[in-house]
Image (cartoon, rainbow, N blue to C red; front, side, top):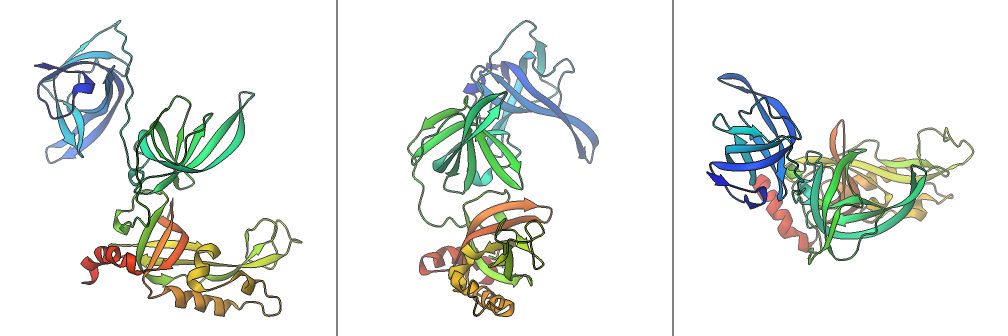
Length: 362
């Protein structure tokens, strides 16, 4: 039998003996041809680290927060990560009165792979777009700093409570909290999070993503493909001059005396050969690809025509090879991309586009 500390376990090992603290313990039903059964899973750790475990069999005496000596455990790789397993040969012995300070470790994740399944993670990237604001908690005023964090797979909005973070070069953050809010993945760190400056190079230029691989609502993504349909309500819209909200009638219900101005909006589906996704876009993303200027919309002598604006948008998008940059969000209808940039595929993009689409069209 091999006595191991958690931090020493880096590969598949049989017949392990360890003394650990049970950090979490849950159970789940498993259905198979042999019938229904229950297995347990959770996290355990010691002063050197933390690992997940799966228990096909576990003693009923074991509870969360217990320090336990375990014999005849083994490890395997699951999704390319080490996991500890217990079966009917595994032995458990409680160690009452023993205190153990667990060293918390976090799985490193790429931004594209972030989801709410991992509550706390480690991230590496480069920060930009710092903003600062004050908030009050328990009668005390504190500051929160917000950033955009980018790696070579995407970007995410990050909040730091009470501490400014270094921008413009590589940084590693340990203990990043991941949550979903308003259909998007958000990240935050507190004052106890570990911050380390690192050497990090992020390749400039588009980072294309296959639509079939999109799983989580993050930002900074590029997709490329052909629009296959455009929403019939795309085109010219009115917005309130006061609150900027879309007006469906002649006046804003909240600000009836404020007046309105014209804006443009489009929603369409784009297909890259691996799947399709809905895209929404406003004036900023559409103006260059459609050749529509702001002064056209504000020309009082010749107000814009709804039909004309719709046809210009349709002509500019449909049947064209496009690249779209934006941020993903999730709602009851699924995932959609809010475009910040729409442009035609150029020579530098053709190689990537060919790779993405050749399996479908060649």
